[in-house]
Image (cartoon, rainbow, N blue to C red; front, side, top):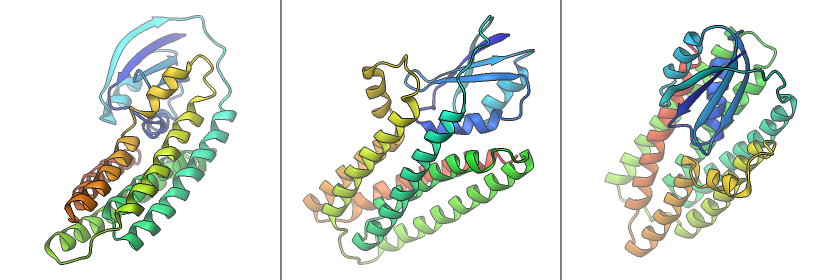
Amino acid sequence: MNKTIFEISKMDCPSEENLIRMKLDGISSIANLDFDIPNRKLTVFHSGEIDQIEASVIELKLGGKKISTEQTDQTDFQDNANQKKLLWYVLAINFTFFIIEMTTGIISKSMGLVADSLDMLADSFVYGISLLAVGGTLIRKKRIAKLAGYFQIILAIIGFIEVLRRFFGDVRLPDFSTMIIVSIFALIANGMCLYILQKSNSKDEAHMKASMIFTSNDVIINLGIIIAGILVNWLSSSKPDLIIGTIVFVLVIQGAIRILKLGK
C-alpha cells in the first residue's frame, strides 16, 4: 500500500472535497481518501502508480500538487456510511438556504442574496450528485454533472443580465436589513455544514474546526453581503449590492465549470 499526499491550495470548503471525491471515484487502485481541509491537504492510500490519480487531481484546477509518496502498512480505514449520512444533512441545509435566500433576495430586491442562493444551490448540486449517483454507473454520474453544471451557468447568466439592468436602470434600494439578517443566518448555516462534515474526524481539535469556518469562501461571501448591506444603507445606493452580486455570480460560474469537468 502506498500513501501519497497532495496539497490542494483551492480546497477551502467541503464542496471542493466532494468534487475531488467524485473525480477520483472509479479509480480502482484507490483504497481510501483522507481530507485535511484546514491545511488543504489530501492523503490518498492506493496501490500501484499514482499517475492516473495525480492527473485527475490536477485536471480539476484546484491547485493540486503532489508533495510526497511513501509506503505504508495502514489498511484499516473509516467506514463511509457515516459520511453519507452527514452529506444528507449538509445537502438539506444548503438547499433550504437556497430557497430562503432566493425568496428573500427577490422580495428585498437584493442581487447579493439571489447570487448567494445560487452558490448554495451549487453546493447542493455537488452533494446531491455524489449521493444520488451512489450505486449507479459512471455514465449516469457524468450526465447528472453536465445537467447541473449547465443549469447553474444559465441561472448565473440570467443573474448577470439582471445586474446590468439594475445598474443602468432606476430601481429602488434593496432592503439592507434583510440582506444583513439573512446573511448572518447563512453564515451560521455554512459554519454548521463545515462542522458537521468534519466532526467525525476525532483528531481535529476545537481551534482547527474554528479555522475551517473562517477559511471558507462561502463564509467570506456571507460577510461580503453583510458589508454590502451596511454600505447600501450608508451610501443610499444599490451599487454595493450589485457589486457583491456580480462577484458571487462569477464564483457560481467557476463552480459550475468544475461540475462540468466531472462530466468529461
